[in-house]
Amino acid sequence: MSSLVIDLVLCGFAYVVLIYFVATMTKSKISRKDSNNDDGDGGIEDLSPPKIDLPPGVIWPSDVPKNKKRTEHIEV
Image (cartoon, rainbow, N blue to C red):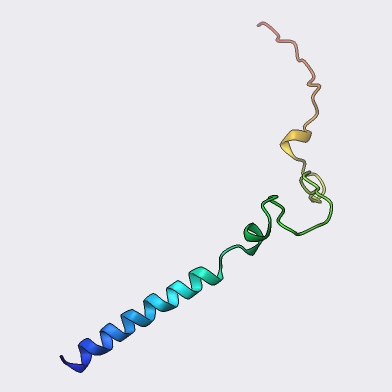
């Protein structure tokens, strides 16, 4: 066997071992401890979207005034 083949086999083996260790170390540790689906970040849940400060004269489409002035059509 040439040294190139030996190097390729050793690099492949090292790659497999490295991927195995990375996969086993990055598993979620919370799921092993208990299964209450708590992500552990704490605090109060606020599910409302943030209020974004818009420049003057710009409004959100949902904030458009509901009452539209009804114009009467003039027949010619």
